[in-house]
Length: 138
Image (cartoon, rainbow, N blue to C red; front, side, top):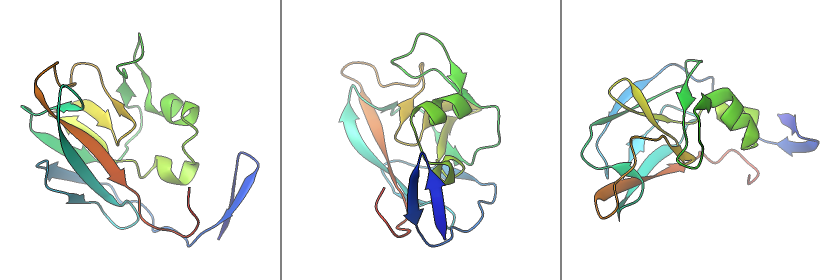
């Protein structure tokens, strides 16, 4: 269908609805996400990305999530962060949320939340969200 976002029109195949999901993730193994959500990858790093010493799960958005990106002084709602990042609405429900236990640790490959970052010199995982091909490039 044709979608409009910030005065731009784009033609793309309809995306399937997002069903709630909660999947265990063992980086660096790629994690295929539900239909229409793509694949989550992780690149090994030192001193960057997520801490490598935590267990992670990947969930869909439920609403009300908060994250304090490393570059910010305060936490903000995920809704506000995604709007500021100009992520088109059809991706906002599909962005994979990476959790360590019950704490939001990262938002796709957009932000690492404070407290979950790899320490300088320590092993880490840099998330890479491969979005599904749905027609026109972003």
